[in-house]
Image 1 (cartoon, helix red, strand yellow):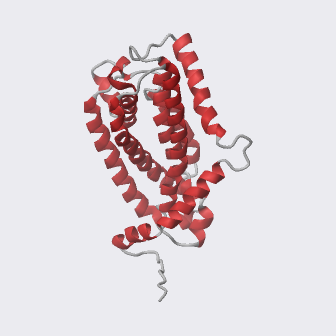
Image 2: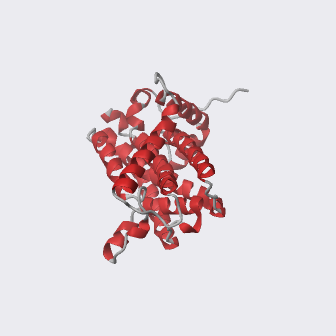
Image 3: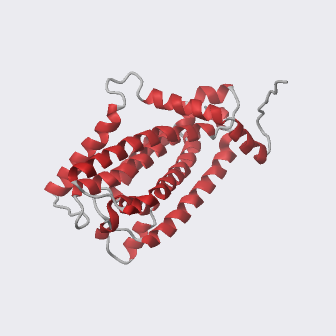
Length: 275
């Protein structure tokens, strides 16, 4: 006997998460589509994911190391320090940006058929993760070329990748819901990413941030702890990392995610009205 599952809006919270799991195949389809659309009708295709981090790293090394004479962590090649920070930042920024616009990009689906809307932001993670993997492979190649040994701390790397997913999904869901109602959010997000690029320790080490009050404010940024921890996993104990920042980073990341999921679910039924 063939079973047919009928999905209806307005069901209980328990049914919603059950439907989300039942539609995991749709999640895979949307993820593959998002990846293919990103590189559709491009001349270089996936090569852009290789060229972008390489060109960004080259520019940052030239500007901050050769021109500004900024020093990194002692004993670590400056290009490796920059590329390690750039690798995890790329995952966060691309994922956050994709999630934030995921509902509007799929507006035709939202207005025509019901399914758990959370599938669309989740599928957007695939694009950021693909770019992350490519940049990570580039980093590994650079470590081999430079002769810098990988640290055993790399065993902790998945924890920081998961934290990056949590914080990018948390911020992304909140702005995705806002973006449907206020289209100005589309102009704000690139600006936020650009500012975040400079206030996070990508081209510099957090060792340089010293002081009583602004150091505490600086470390409240959860991305700071993630970048420092990710760099510590790859480059070893020579890379600056404050283990205490991991506590605040984890708490803030999960609190933001829970609040954003609640807000997203609250606004989910109004998406059709504003699209």
